Image (cartoon, rainbow, N blue to C red; front, side, top):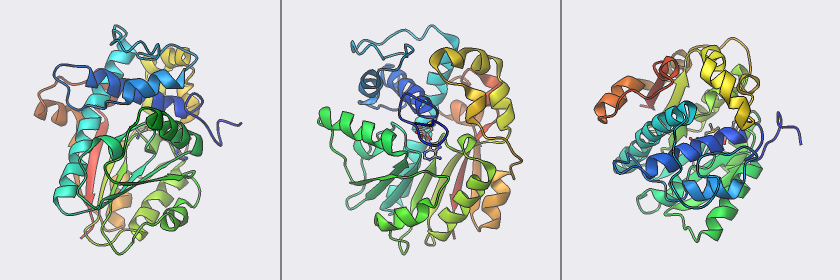
Length: 292
Ligand SMILES: C[S@@+](CC[C@H](N)C(=O)[O-])C[C@H]1O[C@@H](n2cnc3c(N)ncnc32)[C@H](O)[C@@H]1O
């Protein structure tokens, strides 16, 4: 299997989903947790990564995050997960009962959030990632709290048609999420992603997206660059090169009204210090769009 084309949960980009799940497991174990994912540690243990990840031994204990890369990852992931959990709470309160989670990885929102009755929740990711998650959660006896529809796709391909075949109702507003996805898409696929989301969105739809305006900075960060190899992640190779048009400009042109929140602002609002890896997290923005 070429990990450029397809990957599972312990190869290529899939390993980043495992790292994020380990971050959610760490946040969930905190006495002051901002969010709780009861399945995160189980998913990490079941994946059996070649390199030891926190929680991968599967003994159910909270393993110490005495490592700078892991501690920083967990701090940021806890914050980010809470931000986008709150986003779906707010779209539900506003009566939106159709959600699409792009590159859902090992996140378990269909199972762990309280969805308004009648909510349909689509999760898009690579086939092997979705299969692993479904099989592990089934073993755990987990049940989704919504009409959950996994949609195996490559987001560089024509995923919109597959999503419509899976039942997306384009006459109803949708709440979209792209969390931890954009750096892995080539610029042309990112551009197509935004156009496709806009084409499939009824008025009143919402979109939340995590963006980093300088992806080269992420690839060059010394901590990530020097340490991620130990985990089997070749960070630089995961980020396709090429000129990217700013996300805000792309979305505004497609008619979205935008609001931005920086990570330091969010950390302050939630009573947390600015997460580690500051050179990166200072440059990450959570953008929230609304289609009039
Ligand atoms: C950093 S993880 C984030 C996962 C999830 N959003 C979370 O926060 O836990 C990146 C995810 O993007 C997915 N991904 C990246 N490129 C993709 C593509 N071209 N098609 C489908 N999924 C993709 C990976 O499989 C992985 O699950």
